Picture 1 (cartoon, protein in one colour):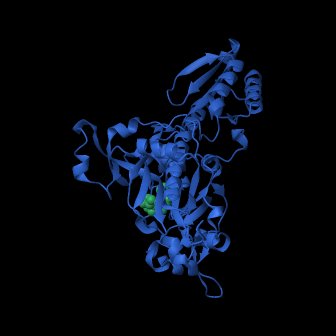
Picture 2: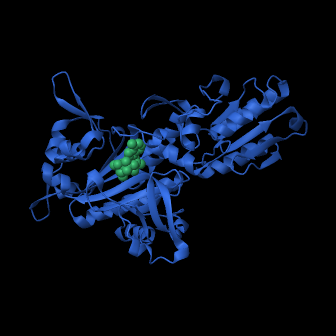
Picture 3: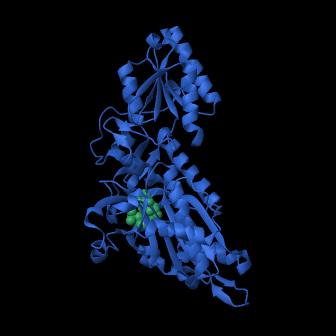
Length: 445
Ligand code: ATP
Ligand code: MG
């Protein structure tokens, strides 16, 4: 993309009402625009990152054997009356009535709807196990929407639902989700720690939240610092292997890590003192096993091998896709702007032309642009007629992890400069070497 043809409305001023750094940078970098409280338009740069996150979530869900689908945002109140949650959910649910006076709602989550789909179509254990998921906009009429996309009213969530015959199989589905989530967050360059949590309105007492540590996080968390040494890394996973998934769950959830809702001071004090941590975190996902809570209420039954009909065992599993943008920025930025991890960056590399209009410099930039594009990468070429200082400031703000700077002085010696946004270190090399290096960096992303 050439910046002169893109839509990147960068703001020079720091927006007054944005309290946390991710919100400020998302506004300043022209990623989002608020349309009303907690509701945002996703401008091209923000939308690009959102799509990247969605793709990672999709890939990892499919890898785990889960099946994508799409359910609507608007739901009929009747389904929620069946589960009893129409009255229980409270003011966070946006209730709407259509022209016929029928009660509708903008879905805050989809347990009822997916249970209805299941009961209409599945009646035998032979069709199990089954996990369906979608990535869809949700609406929760939060009392205090704030921090930009972190606590929006309209937000994008991946929610998945497992259906199993037995509790044992459903717990395997739970473990499988935990493993796939660990992989998902690591691919996004994030450490998200699974912590024992509370079921809330979804219900169930077997649940973990995934938290990204950050001072601006809304949850208070208590953990053994040894959990931060755990890395998922590049493991070969067989998602059908119950023992393997269970042992990973044990590895990642045995050490003390809890949110304030389930915190137990006595257990916490058993951790050696120098490893006890009280901190804040951003909830980027949650998994629940709730057994037959919805299937019993809504009559989602399956016939087992013995011919008996039993309510299907279920769980639900959510990732806050739009909130993740904020969480990633909170975890990865400096005083000049965002620093995108390679796995989620909107463009792979920036090209800065220091002397726009100089034939040699323009030609060198064009050829870098063409070669990077031919290599399957997306460069963002700042070809505007602007001073170098302004170009550097915008590039730092939008946070591409790599930048190639091209100027007449370097070109005289046959070199351009490759700079890491994270370390600030620059290296001079030939344009060919710069292309090769950038290709190598992204080979695994
Ligand atoms: P919270 O405690 O932050 O209100 P929740 O526990 O009610 O969230 P879940 O029902 O677990 O949310 O939803 C799954 C994920 O969706 C959460 O882990 C979070 O990442 C994301 N999410 C929930 N509410 C919001 C919101 N208002 N804005 C953005 N993302 C949200
Ligand atoms: Mg939650």
